[in-house]
Length: 333
Image (cartoon, rainbow, N blue to C red):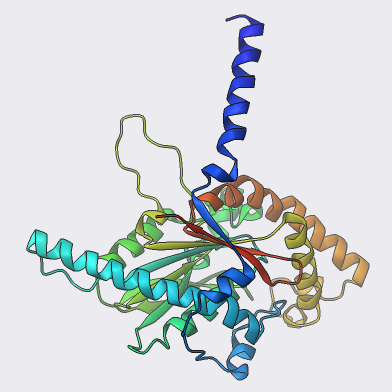
């Protein structure tokens, strides 16, 4: 093929991709904040100001307005999805003449470090557990499935904690397989942000919830497909619904630095903290250190592994600099 032909082919491919990226071809329906808020309908507010004090993260500005305009419509949507999915499960069991155990509805929640995933997960858990039928809702983070520091250090991956290769994927898939099978008392490992490591011989037990929220950086990650067509399970294969918490990369960087500066005067002060060495940095040193960590580890992970999975989510929540969700994208059926 001549160079001219190659250039023509590349230009044609770029034009095609540009066309496919147009909103006309988007698999999502886009809602402004006001449009999304209207979809709350008659969903009742079941959280009070005191609940929000316990649910918001260190650097989050979670307000009652945010819950009413964003999370209540989301709760209503999820209630409809759960009901429809449970009906599909029952129909399939009837078709197969199977007396299968209760199948939990699994929600995957992904996004960058410092994007506010933990707060979103806690608010969703609280709202879903307060539905009129009082479903059992559990929350598990993928941090517990990170390899212990000793393993990461031996493999030279300690500075890549949070990257896909730092997780014990086999253990995570085994956990989700048992959850979907309706097994009783399924253990999940525990991670300590204070110790920056897995807590040995400690587990949380997930016992047949109606809903399980799995929150983590790379929950929507997919790997290369096998050329022979053999099945390769991904974590997202177990999800009934998935959410991606989105924001501009520079905004998330600012949030990360602000959180680091606050931790320097709180959790880092404890001599037992893994990050205690940062507690005595002055403002300029702390900011420089936070930026080095963000730009050397967290931003590359976001750009290379996390952000590319955004389009795999069923719901994308886009935040502004003030942490308020500005727009919502819902995948079309």
